[in-house]
Amino acid sequence: MPEILLSTLNARYAHSALGLRYLLANLGGLGPRAAIREFEITRRPVDVAETILRDRPRILGLGVYVWNVTPTTELVAMLKRLDPQLTIVLGGPEVSHETDAQEIVRLADYVVTGEADLAFAELCRRLLSGERPAQKVIAAELPDLAAIELPYDLYDADDIAHRVLYVEASRGCPFSCEFCLSSLDVPLRAFPLEQFLAAMQRLIDRGARHFKFVDRTFNLRLDTSLAIVEFFRGQQVADLSLHFEMIPDRMPPELGRALATFPTGAVQLEVGIQSFNEEVTARISRRQDNAMAERNLRWLRQSTGVHLHTDLIVGLPGESLASFTAGFDRLVGLGPQEIQVGLLKRLRGTPISRHDADFGMVYSPHPPYEILANSLLDFATMQRLRRFARYWDLLANSGRFIATLPLLWSMPGSPAASPFAAFLALTDWVHARTGQTHAIALARLRALLGEYLVQTLGRPAEVIHDALERDARRCEQSARTQRSGEAKDNSGATVAGGRARQARAVDFDRG
Image (cartoon, rainbow, N blue to C red):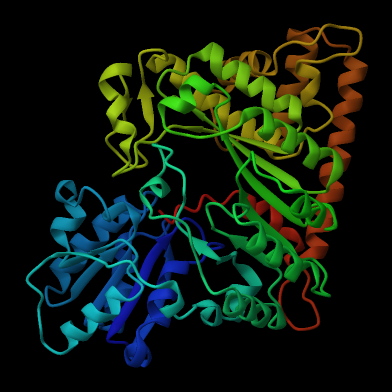
């Protein structure tokens, strides 16, 4: 029975908790007395409590994030009633700020804020020796990354076969975007590169093929980013898949040329545009050269096989509907494979709240604290945009309607319309017909799109039918390829070919 249990509620089974593995790797002599238990938020807290108490730990460390704080609060309340002697220690971005206002903090015994890799181990040593620190909230000192034991050997065979493997070559962010928790991080710091690459090599040797880097600024330092890209390019393995977060206005030629050598779809770049409105980005302290970002995105689409996942934010202070429309249409024109439309969140500790009074910012009081309205976008409009984001995921980001969807705004021989306006009209129509934003079957989506294009917009029926048929054949071919890619390789590990799309959907907020 482990005396120290490390646990969290992941958003889904395919996710893996990198933070827990850091804590376990750095427990030193306490390591053999500790274990990890991961759950999904779909599990009932009462069932999670049963599993935890079955291990009879003395210390329970829980990772708390914006996506799991509500069920984790219920879990903590239950555990403290069932076993008052259990010492519960919280960590993670959600409980690292504004601790006085949180019920989960009140219920727990201790909270370690910030990067707890080494501080959690010290707290456990004190607790197991019988010492109870008087201070409930413990601010972790910033660790020397060279002194941290890397956790990647703790990914087991099941993780490698079935889960996204999160890795990081650096921590921190040099930028100060006010909506992002990373703006509170100290300047960029890097792990020793040789040690990091050696750990990656061990994972590859064990069959790992998909790597999701959580670095906030992967392409900031050319020497490091190029060395990592070259390392993976030199691996003689099939089905390698890499995910990086990219600063949009920085693409040194050497890095671009290296990325261009990878097979189509092997590299995914997550590119946060957020807004093309320079007045808005200046207001939220975001530095971005829009012309350079546009040039880089266009080059990546035209000259590489990189999959581009781009982000825009709805509800930024001072961003009107007309401004968002112009930015969305501009991004569509650059042709990224995905445009993630996200509603602004007022994450705990972020300075975006300083604009509340001037722009009438109204946020939900419940996680994930999404914006409900502001002075330029009322609640009804924000709800339409929320549905827009959901339907865009279903119809555009899914890749299921590549041939059909552009016919909403662009038909041969007719003047092109605004993609945003055209899709918003479709959004309103679909919602009026179905009242649903979830649990819409693919066949139903296909029928709705065809009906709207032909009967409402008057598009030629034969053109729409042909486009839908081509999309259906492409989806079937993709499904066959994915089923094939999920077969076992010779080492017994599941091939990662079918997991690239899944990994792009991961919303990992390390804070």
